[in-house]
Image (cartoon, rainbow, N blue to C red; front, side, top):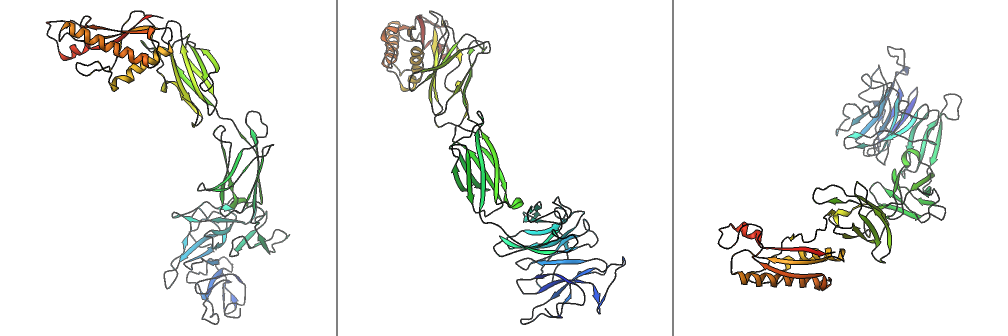
Length: 516
C-alpha cells in the first residue's frame, strides 16, 4: 500500500469506508520513526485515516480523538458510511477495552460514544464489525463463551442493543477467536484464531455455512410412550409463517430440511384437534448446526369433558341419587351412566367429533335431557348447564305450576308466537317424562262476565293443549281446562277494587300433574 498507508512500526486492522473509499488504519503510536511511550511505559495504538483522492491514497492523518495516554484501535465503518466503530481503553469505560462509535456529521465524525453495558463488560470487547446484515459482530472475553476471546453478535433495535449472542462452535473455540469478516452473501467469511497454536500466533480461518438445515425429531404418544405416526410436524418462522411441513412415519420419526433465512424458528408438533401441541424453539444464529436433533417429543390425546352439578331448585343444594345416562345421539347407543353422590356432580369424558344426548332421572322428580356435541369444538370442558337447567323439582300431584309469559290477544285464544317458546318447554318436559299426565289450565281476572271468562279461558287452555299435542305429546296425556275467574290467587273477585298488578296475577296459565 506504500508509505502513505504504512509506517515504520505495526500497521494493523484496517477499515474501508464503502462510501468514499477512505481507509482507517490501526498503528503503533510513533513520532518521526520512533515509538511514543505513555506514562505507564506502554506504546499505545492510534487510528489514522488515509483519504482516497481518486487515483491513490493520501498520507494518513490522525483520527481526531486519539491520545498519547490510551489506545484507539480496530476501526470499522458501517456499510452506509454513517458510523465508525472502534475499540478503546480510554477512561470512563466499562472494562479493559470497550467498543465506541462515532457518527458522521456531514463534514466530520462526532464525539465517540460508548455503546453501553449491554455490549461492554469488565473484560475486553474489541474488533467490532458492522456487517451488511445489520448485525454488529465483536470479540469479547467478558461475555459467557467457550474460552479466550469469543465472537459475538448483536443488533440495534428500538433504540437498544440486543443481548449479545455467542456464535458458538465451530466458529468459537477454547482459545482466542476474533476479527470476523463476512462475504457479501453472509454465508461464508474469515476470522482469526490461535486455536491450533501453542503460542500466541494467530492464523486466518475460512468458513462456509451449509445452506441446508435438517431438523430431526421423534414423536411419541404421551400415554403409551410409543412412536406416533402421522403426527404433523411444521417449521414456522417467528411471524408464524409456515416454512416446511411433513408427517411422522410409523415409528414417529420426522425429518425436515430447508434453507434458513433468519435466526430463529419454531418446531410445531401436533396431530389435529384431538392431540396436544408442542412448540420448540430453534436458535440457528447461536448454534449454526447442520443437523438439529430435537430428540423425543411427547404429545397427548386431548379430552373433552361434560361437567355439571344437579341441585334442588328450592334451596340450590346438590342432590344425590340422580341417574345420568350418556348416549350417542347418532346411534342411540348408551355409552355409560352414573348415579350422583352427595356433591351432585355429573362428569363424563367425551370423544371428539361426536353428538351426545344426556338424560337425568330420579324417581319422583321431573326428569330432564340435554343434547350437545364435540363436533367443531376445541378440547376442554363442556358445561352441561349451558344446555339444560340442572335445578330440579319434585313431582307433586295436583300442585299448580305457573307457566310464565303465556299471553293472548284481547278476546282471542290463538297461540301467539311469543307464547310458543314457553309451551315448547312443556313439550320437552313431557317428552323427558313419558309417564306424566297433566292438566293445563287457563285463568282470567274478575273483570268481564263470568260465563264469558269461563268460555274464553277454556278455549285458551284447549288451544295450548292442542299445540303441545301437535308437537309430539300423546293426546291422552294432556287436557286443557278453563277456570275463568273462579280460582283467583288473591281476593280480587267481583266487585272488589284491585290494582292492575293484582288483576294481572289472576290472568295466568298453569299446569298440574295428575298422574305419573
